[in-house]
Length: 499
Image (cartoon, rainbow, N blue to C red; front, side, top):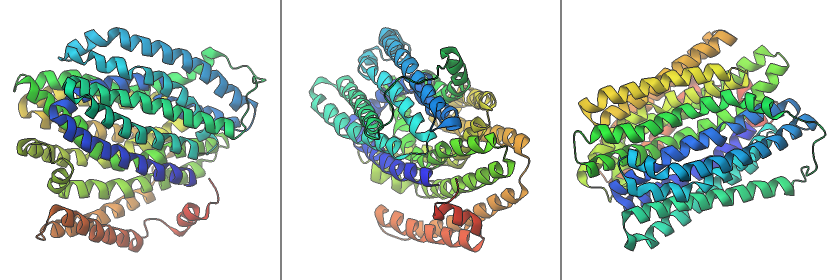
């Protein structure tokens, strides 16, 4: 909880900055410009998943076996060397394929966006090794600070470059925003590397030799599992726009895609950052308990983590669904009335997926900690296939709304499959099922409160303020009355004792 608390606190700050960034960026670039931005970003995210996204989790599991000794340090040193080579190779590869890739997506001119964002893949690859090192030692502050630095510099540099390049057209403005990503990743790497050396960690060669092939092999399940959802997002950047173009002009199709994946996606991702923090922190805890064969400890840690995730995700989903119109009106005034109507509809549907995405991530991390990365990769692959099939079937019928429905179905599928796999390992937890029902009951009370609050006459700011105050108060009281978290769990969370 300490580690997750640090990550969650700084993660919230980073997400606030990231969310604020998408708001002026949407208002500067417009729906079509955000569509251009979101054409490039899924490809970038896919290559990050290939080179680095899963690495911190893999290293946290490996290093936690001997976090203060020679083995953990040797794993870290080998990972730095391997990821440097991989990062340079993938950066060069993206630059080479930038033009044919942008042509395939239907906007050849956006190849420049790939060129300017490509170097950040190398920076993030190296940075991921440092994050894995610190996470394994349950030192979450360096990772947290690097995340905040990344978002803050992206905010300043990305917006400034987009505005400066306004005279050169929308493509140049979008490429300027993407260049801000590269600048931010370089700065974030500098921060976390400086903290590594400032803490006096070793610079000498490790006494142990870790075979490159063994480390590479252990990373494959993590990498494959981490690539699946980014890969489906990459397919979205090709599929969705081309499917929508059969129904509407290309500019409108790119605009709706930008609203869905950029404007609405940034809102929906905000509450998930809290659960991702829990997912990161729980890996070394459960991995250590697995080494001790402490099945009860594994079940207790998993149960507490899952309840915390659901307690955060459920009210977030309810609030966004009930107040979607007010949220979109406040955040995106530059969108036309028709575009805001599209965003409102997409937000209502997408918010349904928040609890399922949160729980899918938690179970994904717990399975990885139990050496079941192959299982998570298989489950997420099935979920990704559900999403792709949903897009192909639903978008020609109901337009961009079908993309939102397909995404929710993807998260539900992934959650259910991960839950089944986890229960096969640890056994069913009837007590946990009861607590989930109690959290849902508290959420139902909150829904009624927010629905009544939304009827109060007044502007959108007041509606959201009253809903947040009254709804969260009612929700918190119900969690306390129902005793969703018992005394032992509260002691564990707030005393700082235990793992």
